[in-house]
Image (cartoon, rainbow, N blue to C red; front, side):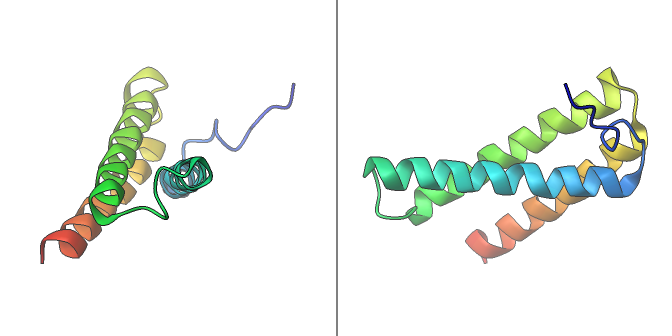
Length: 96
């Protein structure tokens, strides 16, 4: 089984990378599943907004895992930074 040594480092940039990569991968997977199943022809505005809020929740769960369970504060803070940026971008895009 391969060891992901990069995840075990307690660095801010690791948290930023995790905070960006995980939501992007999940968003693409959800988009592909919905598109291939024919539920929507692309994500509508309301559905896209709900998916993005769900991805913020996923980042919050990841952040808690790194801050509390794994005791990697720098990595958790990197995820927190990206989560705040996602929330601010979401609010600006949908509510201004």
